[in-house]
Image (cartoon, rainbow, N blue to C red):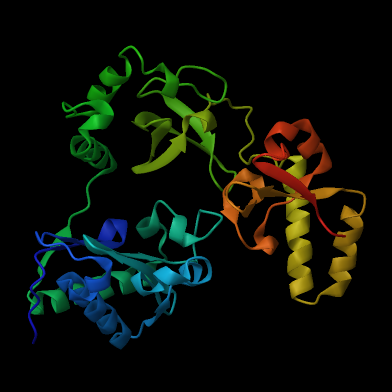
Length: 347
């Protein structure tokens, strides 16, 4: 069996659902000679092995659509309900596994923070089986393989801080060290919650997750305006402006705004049209007939805004819709004609 000359370590992190290789070669290759990179050859053989294991490996659909010239460096694979995306670059390559059966993020499992925890039982077993077999295959190829052991959420936070001393300083050995750092002068610009109240490390805060469910946990500063919220052994990465004090009067599920209700009706109308369910189309169209809707075009990015002002898309059908009231109440944000332009939705 062929041995590879790539100097580096293939690290498998089951709890992060990632595999990454960092090239430790001193020699660098330009893009014209990238095929000479030993770890590029290793990457291609790993993809070949995954294909033989039953994965259907193709170009990454998003890259193929938006950045066709980069398709040789980005691949996508799927086997039953287990999916992965991978990218190679001059210093190494990454492979990240995920699934789309049980997800939290509205854009799909690829963007979930807790990919491993969210995997259904059988998919989780399939994932573990595939990466352990891959580790054995790589070892036989002469590659140094390290399988990371999962850490508790508190240890992960401390370890991340020790790896990145520029965030909270070099002397972070427990969570209280983060609290001490945040008490220093000049840190106040990152510690205001949704109501402008100072967030204190270790206190209890509430927030609504992507499925609009109310969650409560202990907060510790992460980076910039992002905070870790520890809930029953799990950590959530939440922006400070989404945190607030808990009250028993708060609804367990966050009510939809008027614009979100209209967005949902419009999405259901598009879905019914795609399914050729014309009777439902008539019902939904009648509910929207008196509502003037707009899509927002980002002049800087050359893309449409997604729903709830969260991201961009080149696909018009995936763009968010915004009511006339929403646009007019904040025209400098939604329709300033310099960076954004509100375009009426065709009837």
